[in-house]
Image 1 (cartoon, rainbow, N blue to C red):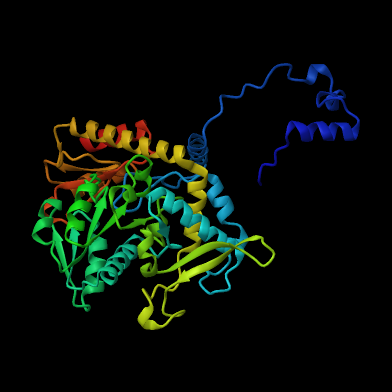
Image 2 (image 1 turned 120 degrees about the vertical axis):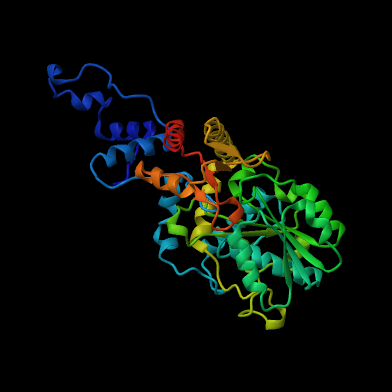
Length: 440
């Protein structure tokens, strides 16, 4: 049941109503020898993250259900979700309503869309955001299609090899029948070889799939010199510390929004984030909610723009996106509102510090070595000199550790490498346990 508190003012009002001078007076009928006679021995207060972990640990003593400590990443992350996110998002007005996309959207849902868009613009440094897309992969391909429409170049798009391999596969699938060449380059140093008047856009990811931070501003300068647009996929949590993509010259920003208040959910459904510069707003897929006033001068919200086939002529539509992940956009809006700028910075800083601690401890062991000297955020790659990644992961599971993601399935040349993610939820004890198990 929910905890219902009362304030000192409310206590005073109730005491006056019943004619009592204090709370203690209510217990005068209890003999003194039966009273405790001292202050309660209550330990110091815990933060929500620590308290939740403590209660989960107590609950596990009453169950034989296995709890795994998660160091998995590669696009889905085990971040802490404040209790208020579930509490508000599960209200019937939001949770039971069909994800709305028709013109007759309720004012409550429209306001959520508007607040979500505002928060995404503040987070990314872009001018305008839509009301979300399906997931990070669909947002990436929609951005590339949007760039083709803006530049009127349909010959070629360029994707860095460090972009999430599943995003790259989605892009190739979309473009397979469109006659647009999808060129993959190893890194930004190879961009001059493919940038010309036929290139519509370049897709970069920072932090990239391997967790490394790219020099986005330098890439933007190269891309714009050729007349192309730069699309950047970001980790929203990293923006608590890193320069916003809008401040680095990015034209279109996309992201997977799962880390903003959505649990892992076995891989989905998730949240696609997309924002752009104001001059491109007419090409932005999905919907945009706006704020206005009604006939009586009261503040209200409306669907300002919805450039999809069901609402406008097909030849003018920017996409066939018919709805959005409304419930997950709501969760993201609540999460960002609760965290605020300082909270986002704190979470990002914890991820950064703990990930670097884990990498240092692992690479101190003879068995492992680093693969790259590039700066990284919360994920990093280590090489197993014994080339037994599958054995390591299997061994870690025996200790209830999900130790990381094997990279060989996407990058054969990295079959001896492991991608490890460390979020703010991981404790030093858990990191030390991982190091001990993998290194024993």
